[in-house]
Each structure stands twice: as structure tokens, then as C-alpha cells.
Length: 518
Ligand code: PEP
Ligand code: MG
Image (tube, rainbow, N blue to C red; front, side, top):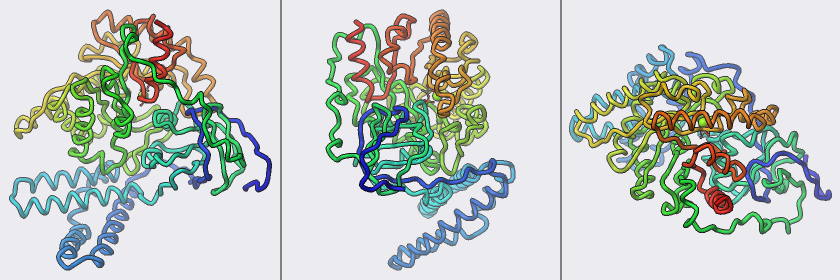
């Protein structure tokens, strides 16, 4: 309910991303949580409904088109409605595969069989590729609509995919009744400079009401005065020169989206320490398209102009849903996420491995495996890379074999780094390491004090990690948010963690802290 004509009123939550935003409220629809994991019959029904939706869209398009285009579209509709196209995907669903993966794998197999068959077949392959992305888009539920630019998103929590799909260039902010400062969406908001407050409890506002979000203070103001629009001068950090602060630490950038490249001056970093490919390719249609992977990786390599780039394999599951492919759920925080998901879905892992192998032919690429627990997971992925490299070789496609390293973000691997003999390097993910160490989910506000409070355990473990990595002669860097915390800096450097990878928006603050620490 809005509060017309009332005096400004502040509600306190917790700061999640600094800065201020004033705008009209966009209240998210609260959807009931799904009652359980989708079963086979749900997946069949979802695929059939997506195919019907795609066919309906093509029909509407065909009716508005000239004769020649309509002919092409009608051909696509026939393909879709012809049971033969869906049959192999339905068979995969019968074996337990999810709808999007089953459909993409079946379509890829179909396109592989007609590849190399001359011009007529090339045309047919293009039709199939088009159909594939249409159906995958439909499966991902395009109807989960974006919200107006410049508004303040108000909801219980916000899925990272919604954040990524939204155009923030027109401003706006986020005010969540639940949520957490350690969640992925908060991390994205900090890196994109979108003010965000979490843990506000019930917010008495409706769509259209004016709301001021002060992400630095962790406060939202109802019925704010317009003069509050201008940000306080302290929000704008003065640039700090790079020269003179390098010797104590080497700074790298974390890249989540191609937009991050625009805010990064590659000359001021050693390279890219982490690319979160699950954010770089945020839809099922993109993730299941090898050429799309390759094009994005090459954009990053081109921009970095010869500096090293570490790309992480897809880290889906946990709070990182990929609509249409993986539903994020609290259960999967301790379940099939990261490398576990990839090992369970080798078609997807192979597709990404091929794109990474091909990208490595264009620049200095390293590959990171997320959520590794046991050496056997690294061995399995290394073998998968070898097999895909051999396949590219046979196909005469250029590739290079990138070094494989692991994210250290599960306590079991953190305590046994010496057993990971095949790892070329280590990168510590303190965001997840903290949640698994403290048994406190990073996006659960009820245990946020435990997440933040387990700092002593974290630093003891970091010391162990740095000592072991040194002893076995492997480089180790830190790419979790702790790397960007000025208050942690001297302790990290004392432990011997000198390679720090942070969001581009945090580089200036870190350089300032380094200059002060020198
Ligand atoms: C981490 O866990 O610290 C990390 C860098 O990975 P992400 O935040 O993407 O889970
Ligand atoms: Mg992580």
C-alpha cells in the first residue's frame, strides 16, 4: 500500500551494493516455489508446450511475411510439428535428462548428422539451429518479463538471471525483503554499480511509489524528497595511480558480463583472474551454442590484448539458476552444482570444453573448474578435455590445450590440495568457502552473522592453502569478494596471497588500500 502525502520514512536493512538510487517501485510478482524437482512427465510436457509455443510464434510470423519468407517459416513449422524431430529428445527425457539439455543434445546430434552434406543441407542446418534457439527460449520462459528501466526492483529476492537480463544503463536500484549481501545477485550489483539493500522485511510500497535506495547505509526511504537524488560526494572515489603499488600485490579483474569489459582498462591489470561463464552466457540458448561461447571468449581475449584470461567452466546450481536448464534451489547448494553438474551432463561439458580449446588458440587461456571436492573430478574433466582436443584435431579445427586449475571453495579440497597433482593452479573462492566452512548459506539472511563471523576459521584455512600451494609449487590466487576488502588486505598479503582478482568496480578501492598499505 502506498503512503501518499506522508513524511519521508526510513526502513533499515543491510547494505549489499553501495550508492544511491531514486526511482519508481517495480514490485516483483511473488511466485509460489515449485513443490519439488521436475519429473519426467513435467519435462515432456514442458518440451511439448515449448515446441507448440515456438510453432505458434512462427505461424504468426509467417502470416505477416512475404511469400518466400513464409515458405521458409512454414517449413520450420512442419519440422517442429513432425513428431520425428522431438522423438530423440523425448527419449533422452525418458532416461532422466532435463527438457532443455535433452532437446539441445538431440538437435545437435541431428545437425551433426547432416553437416557436410552440401548447400541444401547447410540451409536445413540453419533452420534447425534457429528452431533450437526458439524452443530453448520458450522453455526458458521468455514470459518472465523484464521490468522498466530506471525503476527500483522490490521483491523477496532476485534471481541472478533477471539481473543479467535487465538493462541497468538507465539507473535503478534493488530493495529486497530477504536476500543477502553475499549472494551472487549482490555481487553482480556491486560489480555493475547498482545500489542494493537486503533484509528489509515487508516493504509497504506498491508499483509506482517513489523509493530511495541507499545501498551504502543499508536504508530505503519511502516518499523521499527529490533533492536526495544526487549521490553524496563520498560515493565517487578518486582515481589512484597504478604505479608504485604493484610490487606487494598483482591485481586481476573478475568478468561477469561483456559490459564489465567497458569499465576495465586492461593496461591497469595483470589479466583476468576469473570469468564467470554462467553469467556471460545467461540463457539456455546461449549456453548450448558452441559458437556463442567462442565469440564471447574471443571478445574478452581481444580486449585483454595478450594478457592472460582465466575462464571458469559453467558454475550452475546453488543460487545460480539457468532458466530452462537448471532450476536454482537451496538443496542444490549441497548437491549437483559446478563441476558435479558438468560431470552429470557431459554433453554440456564437452560443448564448453570445445569452445575453450578453440578459444585457447587465440590467446593465453587458463581454465578453472568450479566446486571441486575430489581429485577424481579434475581427472575426469582433464580426460574430457583430452578427448575433445583429439576430436578437434581429427576435424582439422584449430585449438590449444589450456592449463586446468581448480577453484578452492569446498573445505574438503582446501585441506587436501597436495592430492590435486594434475592441477596447474589454484584459485580460492572465499564466497563459497565461507558458506561451506560456516555451514551458513550465502543467501540466507537468518545466518548472515555466522557467515560473516567465521572469519577466524577462514583465515586459518587460507594460511593452510597458501602454505600447501607454495610447498607443491603451484600458483594460488584469490578471486572471492574477500580479495576486494581493504580491511583484509594486509592479512592476505602476510599469508602470501598476492594475486587478487576483483570486480572492475572494486579495483580503484583496492589500489587505494594498497597505496595506503605500502
Ligand atoms: C567464490 O565462491 O568465491 C567465487 C569466486 O565464485 P562465485 O562467487 O561465482 O560462486
Ligand atoms: Mg563459488
